[in-house]
Image (cartoon, rainbow, N blue to C red; front, side, top):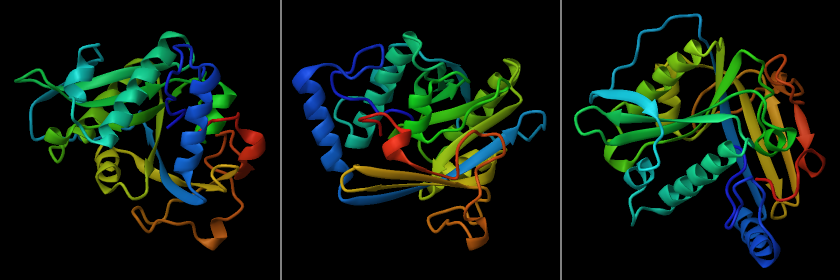
Length: 265
């Protein structure tokens, strides 16, 4: 995840003016709480190595995002998680249109009905330091890309849609000249962890983000070996103090008071 959207955010990625920005800032600080810890597993895949394509339980195909997909992916009356994802897609579409994020949005659709059953982004090199640091993301080389913000609507979960989408997007990336893909998945998201591994990705790092005092202090730590993948994933003592994947451009630990811009998530 890079920036999460703020209410009234502008299309160019800025946050807006005056009271709207202040209300958004206060609400997000309160939501952080006095302390939180979030662990993600970093995955990578060498696109020159062929894998057996994962097969979904329904016939699917990949295509570019269309504006009418929003209503189908996020119907009215959905839960809060779906609402946040819709807000994020809308913000990312605006940011991509204004050049803030060099990203492409892809949709997996069910062949028989044409309904979108998964949405995910492919991010190219070139996003700014503010985005990289706020999202604790690696610096991408010219032949690398990153998968971000996957979402599967409730009616299509458990059908292998994400694994199929990740594989097909990886093939699209390869056709665009990419040689390596990376992705970060929350350590307690068992379904997504399984999906990226089915699509040929292998764990290579752990990213641990901590925040204290409602986001006043934040740290990010990368460690090079994922070890166990799942809710109990943690680094072993011998991993401490090492950086992430060689050449990723991120220190092993950074103090977010200096590393990220105000109001970044």
